[in-house]
Image (cartoon, rainbow, N blue to C red; front, side, top):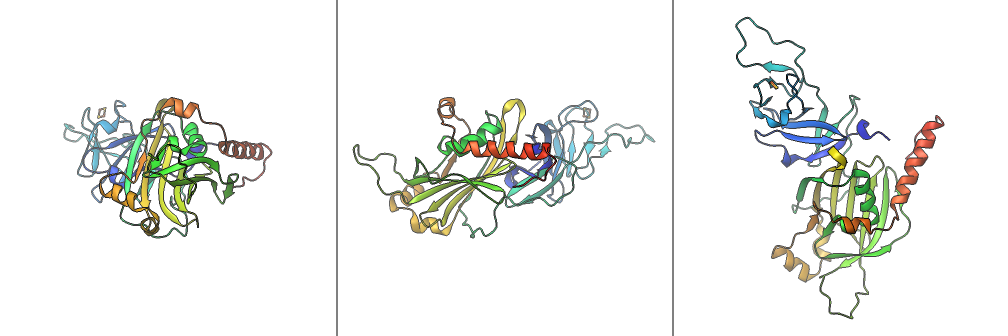
Length: 321
Ligand code: FES
């Protein structure tokens, strides 16, 4: 499937600020993001039409992006060149001097981009019926040194190699086979509160938690939930990803904690968090041996689904979720 046609969360809202434009590669397309004078996020191709210098090397000035090389300025909504320094009197700016623009919107604390020109309503990252979350929000933007397909597969087969909820250990046990719920492939694993230093010989027999990984069917978004045994949400990491340059993954994520976390978390964990233990770590540096050692499990379902879709396309059928 070509993911260029889908809206993708490419950055957290906080990441796009100030006078420094941000260069991001989304589905292999080099983009530059910045805020205009009205604080709307604008997304352009990251290439000056003059000498092809990346516009992300420039600056944002009065809500327009100015190229670092010869100082041409471009309007974020139209992509048109609106200023060229040292133009002779009477000289006009050619309408040919224009940068390609992309549809964008902000929702749920993410900036979404539609790499195709298709007009459509962007999706929210969050699923319906989410309970209200609390203030405790962490977020990040990074470039991961592995291909996006492998990142998604590792999220399903071994999420502990990519992230960790503070004070939570994940077991090897899957709670049934992955299933599709609407557009999301859902996979549950057993988990438990874990201090990480149990006395030797004593095993934790109670596993009161569930780690649920949901992968959006276009493989542009994921949610990793921490649930209690009644499947009540305690916390969630919402992720947007796409393929970056040279087989990397462009990743943005947000963590949200729900009121139920406080009622379920053990006292020692609440204390540890007060003393500075991070509520979540989403790894930016991923050890190769951890990934290489993962057994192929739930990710097979994603592959089978993609194969089914290809077969349907080849036979001229309608795509299903
Ligand atoms: S290369 Fe951008 S203004 Fe010349």
